[in-house]
Length: 111
Image (cartoon, rainbow, N blue to C red; front, side, top):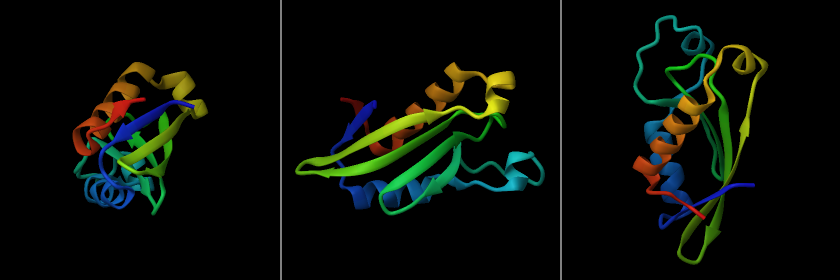
């Protein structure tokens, strides 16, 4: 399973993601009445998250969990590929978009 490292605590990672990730909804997915506020949409809980590109309705989904460390946090993640993505999606764009978002907001580095 791929991993990322950040010097931020799990609580700070969750706080930052909740501030920046636009919650996923049906209207957002269908591009109806959708004011884009973020490059990604998804769900963030106290120790895990799920992110998709907000510009690709057929986006791959990055699913991750936070693991506290003495100096920061480790993020274990995997990619989920919905059937619609296999037909219409663009993996390279989704991966670049979501990973660059995490780099910008959580200052992550590959482990």
